[in-house]
Length: 223
Image 1: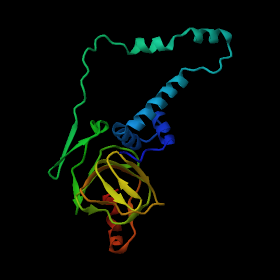
Image 2: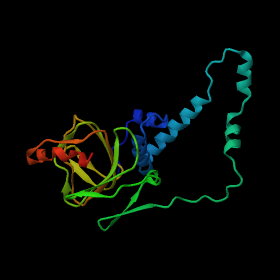
Image 3: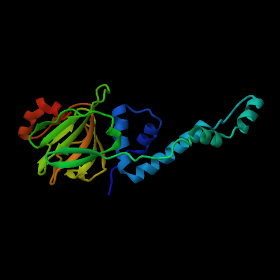
Image 4: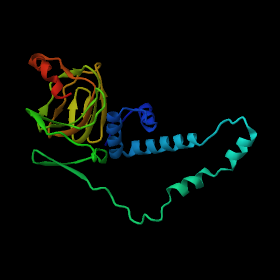
């Protein structure tokens, strides 16, 4: 069961098309997995469409009469109706093979290229080729019994769990969970059976404990 979702204010900004591309992609991927947020977005989109075609005040009475006579519902039906479309083809699953495992990726990633996988211990990362200023979008795989050393974040990090599960000091996360962390959070993610995540980061990790501090020069590997 998905327990962690984008905040309503973030979904509103997403529906308005005002988010950076990377953040829009990870929210769209979460929506694909989450019936609750699908309903939220449908309601927000319907409200935005209604607001767009609602004219609260028009000074000229002739214009008021003109707008009142327009049947916007019929207009939309005329625009979207196409008798030439008689077959709907369902999108095929996007398969990813990694370390003898097969994963299925969200459809929003279908037209985005992935870089070659780079590995460090039990961590593997592939960049999603998405030009978005200082935001980096990646697929991050952690093998069974793997972990990321205790760290905080120099910027923010959004994680969407695509497969598997992991836990940290704040709880346990399963498929579909959407987690937004920043410099106020310190955690040590651990997975028993392995997991695949989609991440968006604005800066590198900062390791905080013991010998792992020596890893800070390579914190950019996960960023």
